[in-house]
Image 1 (cartoon, rainbow, N blue to C red):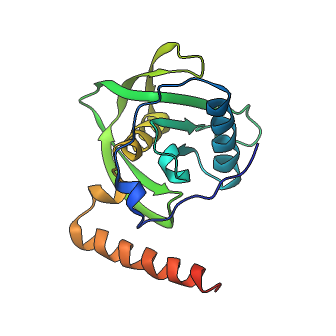
Image 2: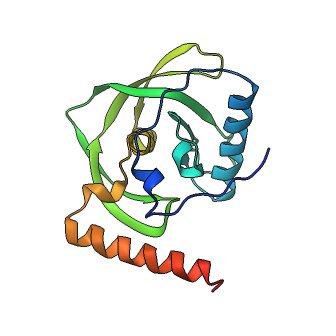
Length: 174
């Protein structure tokens, strides 16, 4: 397993729509392992392929936050939301591509998602709570949407300027 670099906003790859995964091979398993290692190391609860520069519909997540609990890593390939609840929830979301920035985002409280596993087998599962928020957030990444896109334009512009400054500081080695 190899830890990969996480792209920071603004980066055009984070705003692009990803292609479906068509080949289920060893390279896909390596990518899944690398993404999980990267996510855990960050630390985060979800990571989409475009965040590591891979423009395919794949995400990993594990919303178990208790260090004493058993991790529940998941790999979702070509995921899509097939049902949403009318009930809504608001969560203070963050993103590994927009570090140290959080904002309240309203989403469906429960979602049913269909995806393929690493063997190409179709799976459906209903998610609620933090798992529902996380899977929706990561699927948004696959469609070129960031959590800040749910915010008012002025707030979004402020965050983008802050991230541009951070990227300049990183480039200068500060």
